[in-house]
Length: 160
Image (cartoon, rainbow, N blue to C red; front, side):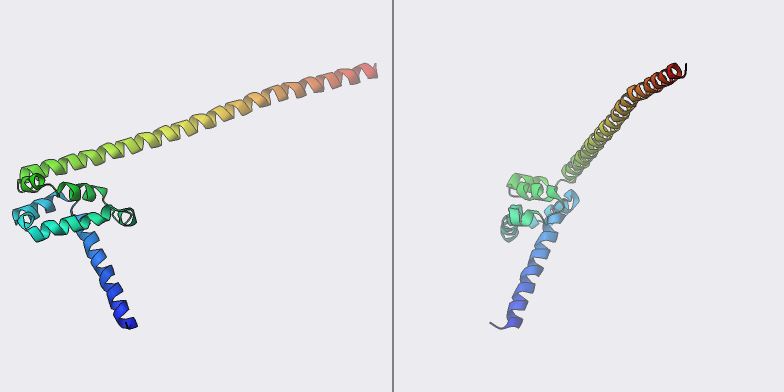
């Protein structure tokens, strides 16, 4: 094989991968799923086979390229005929979209809680360390004051 042919095959494979990846990620959009269902794509056996083929994105080597993990969840659901039939209903797709948004909001609240807890722990830990440092300094100050007064008393005694 010539180098040009090899390069063309590599570029074609890369192009195919990028197209597949882009399509898989569009599956995260319930409105797009409704669009496909209303145009009867889910009744086409070739399209169903393509959806089965796209399951390779769930493998460890490929999953790292998917930005929207819910796309893989919907890809799994699209393997079920009942789910594909329900997607024709726009109300059903809006419900899915609402649930998706609520899940993102819960996730964001949970992240914020964890960050606030971590920040709070760091702040209280820092305050505790400062208090411990202050307590440690206080006895040293008293010890030095005692040492100075003892030294002064000794010097005064010697002077008399």
